[in-house]
Length: 294
Length: 343
Image 1 (cartoon, each protein chain N blue to C red):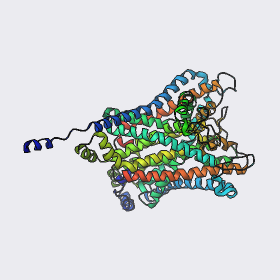
Image 2 (cartoon, rainbow over the protein chains, first blue to last red):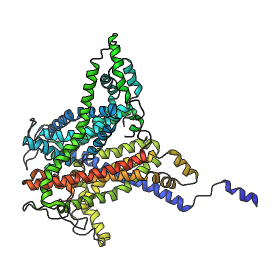
Image 3 (tube, helix red, strand yellow):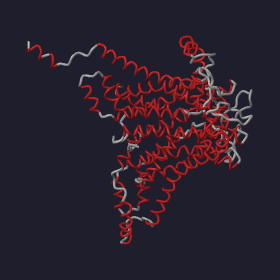
């Protein structure tokens, strides 16, 4: 009797059927959730390729939009316009973002640094349409024109906080010993930061820039009343400019089949651009010197 | 963000102050490297990067200033009533933003109801159940969802999701759940339901990314301890992981809310854009962000424009508050853990 009582207590009691069933049920639910989340992704990419690929041809890539009712035409001016706006945004946003990131990493371990850090996070969460309003107020109202410049400024404002935080994070990953080695050789602080610290963190910083770039490349809301859109070629910074995302939007909500077809084609080009950038960055980050990049 | 903990203890404060003397002494005894005018160059560099930092502050200050000053006329004309009146009438210059506030809240809450269980499910699967080789690709794929531009979600929703809703989902919902009053009226496809669903698809990656981050921040010993007590895997996840990561997951959900509130294009394309308050989710609605998208560039009168800017200001303030709460909640869980998990 004592023997038989002592023996079972060394092994665990069997797990009840209800508990096992719950466990399998939850596992199934989790798998189901993954499938449900991946389904739209598959559907979106599938449709983009299925609807878009047939509409991309030389005319689409080299011509401007045709008037309503005419078949053909393309989005060449919109593709160029997106390029122009992104160029303005990068020229304005990247240096400021990197500078602020350097400030936070190298000089920002104080109250003021915390304030800047917090503000950057706040700026990151501002809805893009609100940024559009502000760009409208500060650029369009003073210029009295919708313009490529206004669109670029709006996107630059969106890029800055992302680049700032990414740069800071990457610079902080650089071991302090590297900086001290440079100081030990008599190299000044600014030279150390630019040629040693920033150089070491280059791949990570580029990752941050590319992610910020990918984030704003498809933005539509802040361009609606800044770049405004244009049916014709424009290279002037103070004139309304077409953008791929704006063109997709106005074609998608139009009632014409021909325009719907072109909207899909434009969307395919845009997504290839963005996913290409993101994947390239992922690949570079996983192979790069700084594994912590993402 | 987590790296701050890593960066904090390093010798930052006194270091740069002590350097210039050393460098200057070196330079006089015959420099090995051309170091330039150190004192001057260093302070110039400092001022330059400080200016960039101040720039970030200035941007937010400009946003606040522009929004408040441009919306002042509406504030003077209507005061708080602006947000509690439901007639939006540009012709007679009378503005009430209630339908937009209502539409924004309903579409966001609806999207969270759909997205939260899915996002947590995905996060649980990736961190706790998935075989290791599947983990990276799955995390990458869900991140890819976050990289798709809003306008492309909208395009897809118009031509794929909306017809699907109109032909299959809405008739089914009306037949079995019509009695609730939430699923009444003609099934247009376009409307509040479509907006909620597309928003859900868009916020899932955000919520699941944060959930994954806080779940990986829960110490491994915790899991092992619960398992050692004889728990099944689900019991371990529930009591050992989810309960500890609760606040952080809540933070992720609120961060998703912040995104949903400010989301513009996809919602504008499928919500129907009609400033009405209807109980049925089949009915068209309007959100704060989409009224800005549709009407801002065409707003003629001064009061009209300022009413729209005030909608923008409200949107700005709400998303800021929501984001701050979210970041605080996430921070309470991830503080003290080394750099972002290893998902």
